Length: 259
Ligand SMILES: [Zn+2]
Image: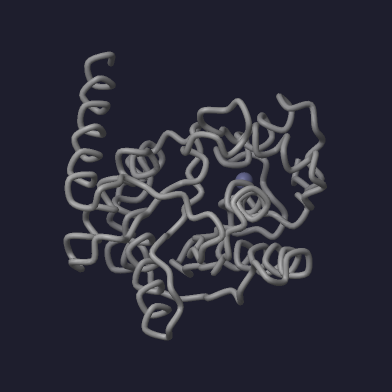
C-alpha cells in the first residue's frame, strides 16, 4: 500500500514537471477569472460554487451533463435550484446553466459492466469523459469570445474512486493540452489547492458542510442520492457518506430520507 502511494506521488510529481516544462506553471488559480464548473447537484460542487465565488471571485459557467444516471432527473432539478440561488446572490459571478446530454458509459455498454466493478471503482473513465465534454464547452465559449481556460471539478480530499484524485486531474490536464495543442488549459479541483480555506491543505466533504452551514448555504436544494426515487434512500453509499458526514460535523441534514 505504502509503495503504491509512493509511486502515485512520484507520478504526480512527474506530471507536474511536464506541465511546468511546457508552460512554466502547473496550475494557476482562476482568481476573478471565468471558469466552467461541472455540477452534479451534490454538496461538493454546490457549496463549492459559493466557496470559489467568495474566495476567488471566479465567474462561473455552470455545466451539467445528462449522462443517463438513475437519479438524473433529481440531480438536474437540484443543479437548477442551486444555480438560481447562486445567481440571485451573485448576479455578476454566475452565468446561465449549460445542460448537455451524452450517455456515460454508452447505453450499449452500460448493461455489460459488472456491478461489482462499478461499486468498487465507479464507471470506467466517467470523470475524464465528463471533463473532456466540459473542456469542449469551454472551447465553444472561447469561440464565442469568452476568455476561459479552466474547468473546475468538485473532487474533495475524501473521494476514493480513481478518476477523482489529483494525479488524475493532472493527467487529464495534460491530455487535453496535448490533444488540442493549447497549453493554457487546466482541469483542477479547488478543494485540492492550498489556501482556499485558511489553515487547510486540502478540503474534505466535512469542511464544505461546516463552511456551508456557517455561510447559510441552503443544503435542502442539494441532491446526493443515486437512486431513481425523488426522496433520498438513505441507504446507497452516497447517502450513507452524506449522513455520516453531517453527523460528524454535528449539523442536521435538512433533506428528507426514506427511512
Ligand atoms: Zn441514496
